[in-house]
Image (cartoon, rainbow, N blue to C red):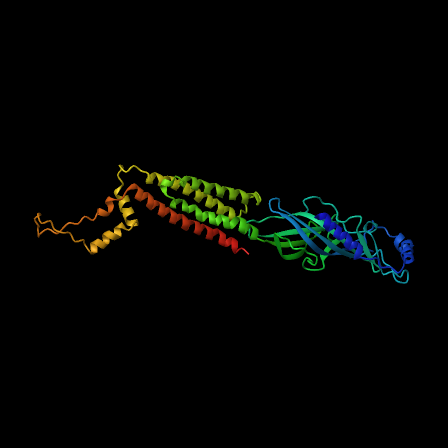
Length: 413
């Protein structure tokens, strides 16, 4: 991929930057003239060597080839138009009719531009095949290709709806800011030749000039927003659906024998998703993605559902010879609306046919058995009640956790 872009840059220099001269004799005469033969590229291009040279730059971005979140590295391809005025190499039309020439860069002085935040090397930019355009007034224009891999701090708090800002910093290596100062001709990166990236959307670019340790720096900042469609379909939505399915373990018949297997399978699935997310993120504690917190909490809830499933199965299969506590019977009766029936009977007592053989004491009011609703409560009834209770609790808990973590992610933009 990088070789293809380098070929494009070479073609750009070859076909779009022609030599503007009157004739071959004019060009030969210029090379033999004192203007050129007396020039020494080792000399700083100012009449007064203590004067500051301003180098103008314009960065053209061609493509963002890769962004490695784990390593924190940005790979891009582009080229820079660099221009400055060389006081030592000028001529007039009286001495030579040519207005400008195009010669190999190694024959002339050039600023030793270095990509200061490169993660590969701090080599000077430029290649021996590049040309330099020189006008008669001393303005030098140098187009240099950039195939870079720079360090970039990664903030994955809102992954996969995150926005990253990466910097590309240039400096004239070895020169102080009072000798060579870098200045950009525009406030943004030129995107005329930019090719859209399928994973990242370039939302903004800025250019900053700064001085650090008496050296001039020109910093290009790229603000990129991730395109979350792939991660939304293949990761976020399946996790939410799995979280909703997690609570369905309590609706499985207790006699089916599949409850524990279902709960353990859901737990392992969450663990797999957590591993998948961790592999795509840098191994850093600060900051951590909200998606990791969401998955970890869902993993904990899945583990709790497994434990609760085992406990409810023990209740369901409890020996009926063991007496159910009175308070548990009343609680079960209340939650299953058996108490509602009792309260209705209180308002409308049942009519009981009198026993003709029994003597009726008119002074004693009739006694009704209001505990009939507790007599048929068994351990299976308690187990079924617990299943419905925990199903509702886990459903509400899953929705609450999903809203709490996923809404901030979706609205991070």
